Picture 1 (spheres, rainbow, N blue to C red):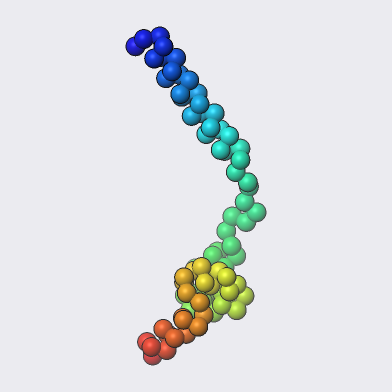
Picture 2 (picture 1 turned 180 degrees about the horizontal axis):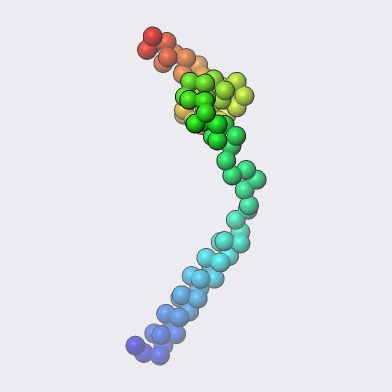
Length: 80
């Protein structure tokens, strides 16, 4: 390998390493690692969990099911 090519390779690796280290520093620490309802999921079961999410955490309910409460009720009534 020529000297110039070796220098370019080393500089390339150094650049990638520098960018990676800056990316690690730029991350903000998480304030919450796991939401309370996620840790209670094994205790509750699915239906009580959905009721709990719906009443106390409506945004998490929508994120968990990817639908809002009205659509969930409509689909549930179709199954009954």
